[in-house]
Amino acid sequence: GTYHICAVRPDGTLACFGSNGKGQCEVRGDVGPVAAVSAGSHHTCVVKGDGTLVCFGDDSHGQCTAPADLGPVRDVSAANLHTYVLKANGSLVCFGLSAPKIPPNLGPVVAVAAGRDHTCVVKYDGTLVCFGLNDNEQCNVPPGLGPIYCGCGEMRSLPRSRLVDMSSSRRLQPANDTFIESAVLAC
Image 1 (cartoon, helix red, strand yellow):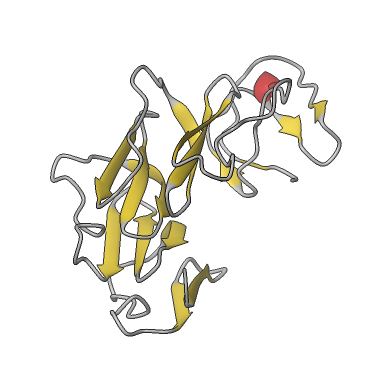
Image 2: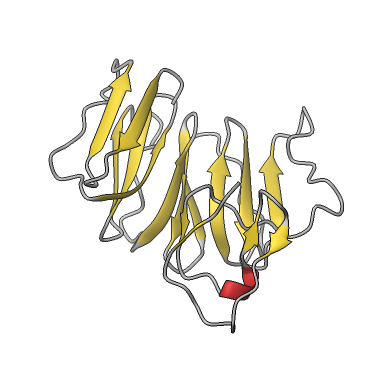
């Protein structure tokens, strides 16, 4: 976050510390186990192990108010005054103020990272797509970048043939195209 940080302990519990002026570090007792966490400017959002989204802290612009029909969540990226959520089905949802609009026909995504006024996603085919304010060319994906498969953490249910070791840019060679349930990818 801007002035706070959160970390998931090995037992799946959450610890947040730093500025707590809006309650962004006040971890509720029902939050764990934590599958993913993201600290925004003055709010924190957590994906629980069961796929439920929980946000706390500043909600003055709706950045903690997820749609009632959200359903299971795979990942979250909290930004300045908005939050992006990657649903279990690969679709992207955003709520809050001044969020960059999700491009039409984006298709399923496997990772999301929201900045103050721009957002980048990795589509299922490995294509990096960035959208929003582009005043510093932060949305200009370099031509020829190639497929991106890196979340610097856990990516669930990716086909083995689509995994790339980002530290060497080489495609991992599986025995077949079976799905894996969990892989820690090197960046």
